Length: 363
Ligand SMILES: *Cc1c(COP(=O)(O)O)cnc(C)c1O
View 1 (tube, helix red, strand yellow):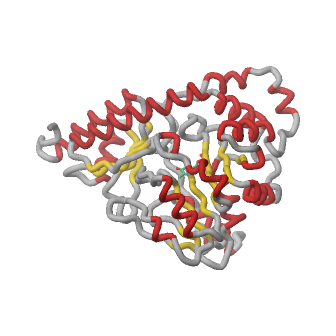
View 2 (cartoon, helix red, strand yellow; view 1 turned 90 degrees about the vertical axis):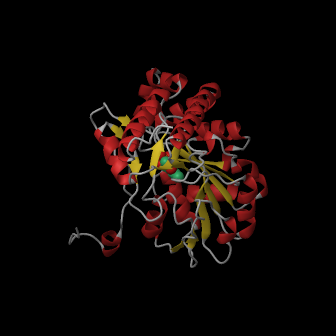
């Protein structure tokens, strides 16, 4: 694998491995937490705007001023409290660079978004991973003591479990000298957002994405919300890396999508309803399903290994996510698709687990 032209730092990197994006389309794709519903029609209208040609000819607004005002207004913040980037992954990367390069280790859960250790390696940040409880709960008391900061997704991934706001507040009080990043990629599916704490906590940075709840994973738009001093820090990093990370189309489409609150809410409600239905249906088949506030569930099948079920589902053209990692290797992460897709998934799970358990799959 090593290459004579690679620097030693490059040779040491272990890049993030994204979920599979298969080409030919007859698959039920429940492996990367995409939204099954299309983006807002108002957002798509932007694409046929004749002014787009001129917008593309020129460089975009480097500070995404209008989009930041729209996002600020949506959350009751000023545009100085909003930073936007090319997907929340980029916003995360800038946050690691801006706030976590310190002598102490960064703290995040042992089971969480696997991009965090990758950014740590990229920027030479040491890290420590307090273990989740047996039922995949985070205990915020584990996040005290000398640290470069704290980062965690809420709801967590891939467990789907969500912390109450009181716990987030406790975390902010445990690390008053350090930035605490709450990665709210999945908060729109039923959790309580920490955005309401921003005015009271100068160390809180909330990161959001349009990839999941707004059905815009292909657009690449993420943002951070926090007090102006943190946002200014992120801008310094961005302006030392790429002045124009958000293209002219993304700035306009994102603003239109965020303004269409009614459509957004209707999609989230449908996903939440399908999540409840799928959770109940799989529990009836004997699965252990971790309670989720995200657009996915983590489920352990009865009488068959998670890896075998993953393969059997794959053979039936249903793609879910299997993690060959300690503690979660007996679970599958299943994204919530349309009602019809979830019915097909449950039906296949019933057939497969029923067969393996000698016909006890149906209750
Ligand atoms: C999907 C996801 C992201 C990345 O979102 P993008 O905006 O598409 O880069 C960030 N954090 C978590 C926890 C995610 O699951």
